[in-house]
Amino acid sequence: MNPNKGAINLIIGIIVAIALALGGGYYVYQKTGGDVSFDLPPILSPEADKTPEDGPLGSDSQGPSSGGTQNQDQQPVVCTVEAKICPDGSAVGRVGPNCEFAACPATDLPTGWQIYTNNQLGFQISYPGNLVKTDFELFMANLGHLANINFGPNLSINVWDTSTYTYSQLQQPSPAANQVVQKDITVDGHQAVEFKYVNIGDNMSGTTAVTRISIRKDNLVYILECSVLECDSILSTFKFTN
Image 1 (cartoon, helix red, strand yellow):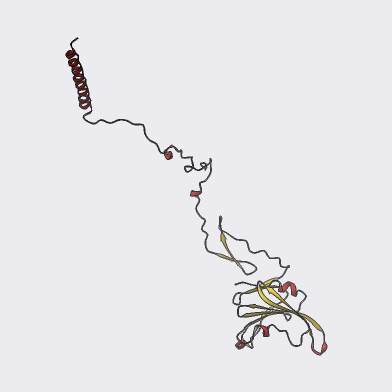
Image 2: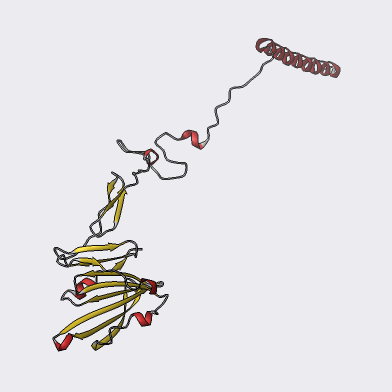
């Protein structure tokens, strides 16, 4: 066999293959107008696979159940700014969700008792309804006597500042007091001194048991003096309002 002839056939085969490839490419180019593109499958992110009922990616939260209300649809309740005065003198406002007035503080007062509130001096006390409140004229206002409030002849509240007299001076009972028993206490979180003693009437006409409590709050001294049967109950209701 002639070796040159085999080489010639190989070269011819290569040339034919190249021609076919060029021809096929030219044919495709003519058909597509030079715009060759391929349709690839879409690449989806994990978020795209979620249904509307699914929660955030990576969470175990579930979608809303039938008839449920989503949290983002709930709007904060805004109530009008109003106040209702309670029997104890305090005030309550409106609260959600229906903007009704909040409940007044519970009171465990005996039937017929009244509540006295002094907003100017910042205190409150309860007393039996048969006692009549009277504000007496201040004869020593220039010496720091700010108030003299009486509920009948046997219950009084006097308020002093300490511009003239010290707390120690103001807390002392009358020099005529007998059988004095003194005790340090606290009233509504404030330092106080309690005196229990006996007053002897004019011409030895009789004796009266008296409880006197002096409460110190800032530069004011509140002096409560009581000589009725309900003294302990009355004095236990005293509290500050500011």
